[in-house]
Each structure stands twice: as structure tokens, then as C-alpha cells.
Image (cartoon, rainbow, N blue to C red):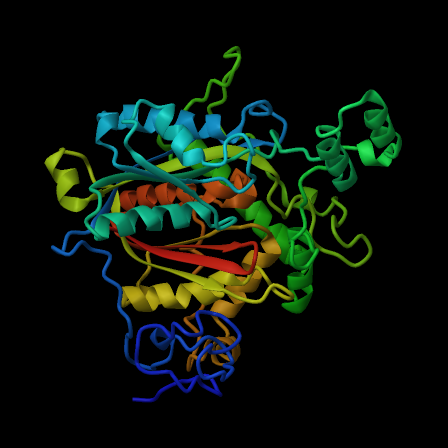
Length: 484
């Protein structure tokens, strides 16, 4: 058996599942040896599954998903334009519990996420507990992993079940790109703080006189990556050039996504996993995603100008996900508890993995790093999958990852693997459309994908599926789902 090890390798490295000294840092904190990639042994042995994952309790019970629901996804400043994320989260969790007919007091843990944080509700999970009739003693905390947030929430609940801490939990995410935390300039913030400490009118007027009109202008949330200054769109443009992804290929994928999503809605495949939402003041409702091009025509995509590189770019508004409002949630249980309550099990989590890479270049390649780990931990290959669902942040990012799934060179140089995981069979890929069509409320997308995938697996008679997503900060997530 041949070991495929990055060179040089940490001197502390052994056959442990993970080299904890590296943990995706640049070098080992103990021996100060730098590695090509973090020396994770579950990636490094050809022909042997290292660190095979068992998503089970100590008594051998699996972690089951018994329910999944989401709000319709709405483009920024449309039907959910005045609805904060916390209210979207309450809305979907309340409805999911009602449809499951479960006593809210039985919920033992809620893990929820919100990427665009609101200062007045920093722990969205706890607000959901307090606003939906659950016991006030229900454990609740919030997580964030950018666009993979609800994957992280699902894993956290699953791990609580595996540890025996809980039997029932809810995971999910909500985001509003319409109700945003609008800030003020640093100079105005400092002046307001100083103003609160002054005693005389003269002192107050003197402080205010130092402010210019520019200082008084509101500051919207940054759309750029904190560490690089690049927006996600600029990163996608960079990747399109790096991986030779043409404008025609990007437009074709976007057209495919909208066409398949429109078809899925028309055939009734999405209806039962999307609630009808009645936002305040309850005069209107929304029961369907409003971003999908129901009559998508490929030629119309070519008419749009590049959005991030006006002269040489290929990434446009049409082959990118729009800013979106929405929420999604899933309910997880210990397998035996679900059967005890007489609930139908949608499916099980077979394995999961997260990855982290550099942010200066190709930051959205997370799926290409996380997916091989999740496959290995499940003890399967790409060919064993019935469905593959990848988050389509941008068409360019999606196509770049698909290319690297099939690249032996990438596998050897970046992953320390002998060969690529393989080429994706497009008849299995995003068969109901993806985020380019549905939209992308950052923290909610993972829960949408999990629910959508499990329901489609059920229609196909069961099997295994991959969910995978890129995320800001060079993060990636992958999860293997199973339906019997």
C-alpha cells in the first residue's frame, strides 16, 4: 500500500485521523515543520479508508432527519423587504413544528445561524426558542460559517445527538439582505461617544462642528472579504480566468439551473418543502421563490454586461446568485426517538467534512477540498452517489470546482491524493436547479439543500447523495446523505 504524503511532512505526524498540530495552519506549532497542506491522514492513503466516520450514537443509532422546511426565497427588497432575519427564522421553525405535530417542549436544542448579523438580536437561535413556544430551558446558540452556516448548524445538532446530550434538535439559518445593520463613519461614532460624556451645550456644539457632511453619511455593510478586500464577485471573476471558464459556459449553467428549478416547481416537487409566508402587516403573502426565471431563454443571458470586470470579465448578474431574503430549517433526531414518536424519517447523515484554504486566490474552491474527505469518511466513491448537489454561488465557481473534481493534477498537488475523485455525471448534478435560480439567503442555503436532496432521493427510491458548498473565508463544506 502506497502512502501519498505531502512533502515535507510534519515530524510529529503519525497515523492519527488528524494532525491536530496543523489543523490547516501553515506549520506545526510543535516541530515548526511546514507542510504543503495540513497532513490529514484520512486523505493520505491510497486504497485504504482512513478515519471512516460513524455518524451514530454510542449505542449505534443513526442521526435521522425527520423534517425540513423553508420560506420562499425572495430577492432583496421585494416581498420580505421589511422582515428581519429573526422573524423569518421564527416563521419557518414555527411552521415546521406545526407540520410535524410535535410538542415544542420536546425540542432540546436549537442551533441556528445568521451571516448578516443584527446587533439587536445577536443570538438568533435563542430568539427563535423564545418566540415559538418551546420550553424556555431549551438550549440555543448561534453559529456562522458564511454560506455553509446551516451545514455547520446541522452538524452541531448531529454531534449533540451522537454524544447522547439530546434526542431532538433543530438546525437552520436565516438571512435578510433587505433589513441590514447600517453603520456610521468611525469619526461620527467617536464623536457620538464623546458627545454622551460632555456636560455643556458649548462642548457638544464644538464636537459636532468638527464633523463634515461625509462623516454623517451612513455606512452600509461591507460586501468585500475582510482579509483581501475582494468581493465574492471579484473572486469568482478571478476563478473564471484561472480555470478558463468561458462566458458561454457560465451562461449555459445559469440557464440550466433556472430551467430545472422552474420545471421542479411546475411538477410540484418543491411545493411541500416551501411554506406560504405572510409577512407583516399580513396584507400580502408569498408561496414561491421569486428569483426563478420561469421562461428562461439562453440567448437573454448574453445581453448582460459583466458586473465585476467591465472590460474583460465574464461574471454577470445573471450567472451569479442575487442578494436574497429567506430562512430554512431541519429537525434532527436520534433514530430510535423518531421511531418511538411514529415520525417518518426523511433520511440520515452518513458523513460530513469541512475544509479551509487560502483566501488570496481561488477562495471559493472549498468543495474540491471538503468533498474527498466526506467521501472517504463515508467509505464511498463519487460513482456510488445517486445525486450531487453543489451550491451555485456563481456559475464560474461551480464549473471550476467540477473541473477540479476530475483533475488528477489538482488531486496530487493540492490534496496529496494519487488521483482525482472523478468526473461528475451531470445527470446526477443539481437535478432540481440550484442557488443561481432559487437565490441564496446565506445562512439558509445549506438547510434548503439538505431538505431538497432528501426528498428527491426518496422519489428515486433511496440512495446516497452529496451536498457541498463553498463559503467566504476560504471555507468549504460537504455532507453525505442517505435515504433507504
